[in-house]
Length: 68
Image (cartoon, helix red, strand yellow):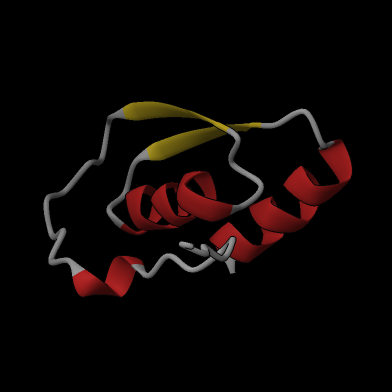
């Protein structure tokens, strides 16, 4: 039996130093997991990140987490 846990992603395992300034990136499911991890990384790299989710409350909290 295999088990998995949500929110167990770590973007710091990768060297993603490419400058993404001027790029627009749309991420669906951005309130948790892979979507949130990608949003954080792309934002750090200078991209304009458009975050989307069906859960507005969680998305608002995730947005604050990305820009802090």
